[in-house]
Length: 261
Image 1 (tube, helix red, strand yellow):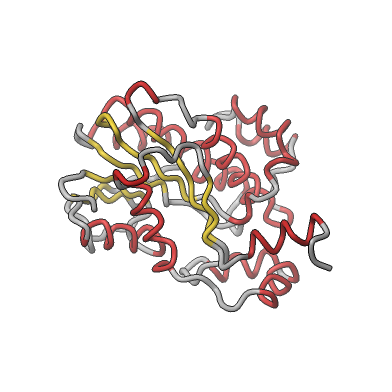
Image 2: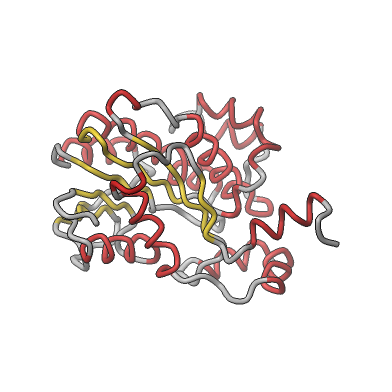
């Protein structure tokens, strides 16, 4: 499915990113892994980079080769980290890396962003999302102070994913002349090393979600969808957010619209 393709996977050392790297290799890709943690598992080359640091991103872009066929933005931080750092990792750094790598991407390349069920409320945050267009590493603290994107209730994480989904949709045709597409995948609760961080932050909300789900997701549930979006078979899917959450997003939408009591 990915024979001969060169794929960059951030967050490749654990969780969903690690499984994406493993499955991409299985399907014939050459995998360039990016993570702060050193690993040689399922990658052909490893690049150590802190995606909350603009200079580290600059160095990473310089080191990565040309001829990139896919970028998987899987690296991110849970809401137990300070809000400004969450936004840097999950939104600002992700966008910077993606945009700076565009000149090194092949025609027909695919960008897949790992969003989240946490971003389902993006339509209620449009004004803040539009203001976040000007968000950068040097003004993130002021943005947090003036918007609903702080530490309380994990809002920094929720906002980062809301804005990421909107950014993906808005860039549905940005690179259409080069046939480069961008999509995102929104997992529900997944049994990865950071699941406990979400349970600690969300408390009762997480317990309520658990009551209606049959089980937490696994990285193996998410990675195949990412691989499909990297493949040529997804060539006409553009600017789409695909929920992979055991039906949780459908449950929320049905409940909010009165389709279920």
